[in-house]
Length: 133
Image (cartoon, rainbow, N blue to C red; front, side, top):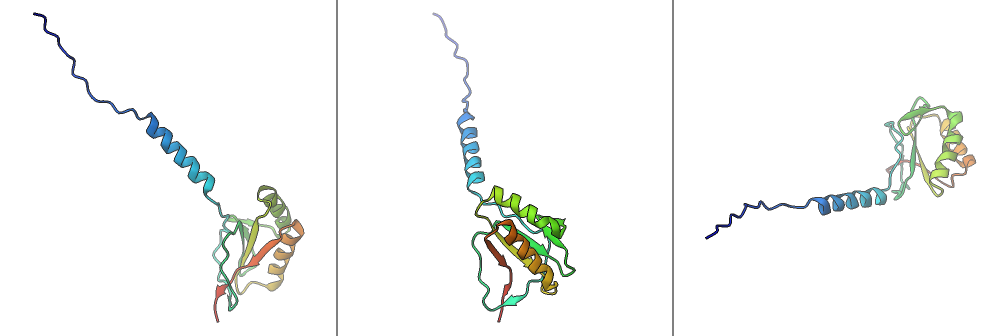
């Protein structure tokens, strides 16, 4: 009488489909996420009774109380704003820009930033404010 010895088989889980699914979910979330470009500076916004929330903001430009301009956390010379906005529009053709200027910022600098954005071709520009009375 022959005795057959069965080797003990350990159950194995095939991880390949799980890894594939994780990569598919990762790609889905990366593609569907809208990235906001932050100004990189904290400013105290002025209050406005007519202020409304914006849904889609593509780029924020920050202007400090001393008149320094920040885009994506980096200080930018005011003469370089037009070039930066042109390259931004090349990436995001219908992009919107919000200028977050400090309430004690000189008005002339805020208007110059706004004008340079318009000259670069940005059609959707807003100035940020807090909702107030």
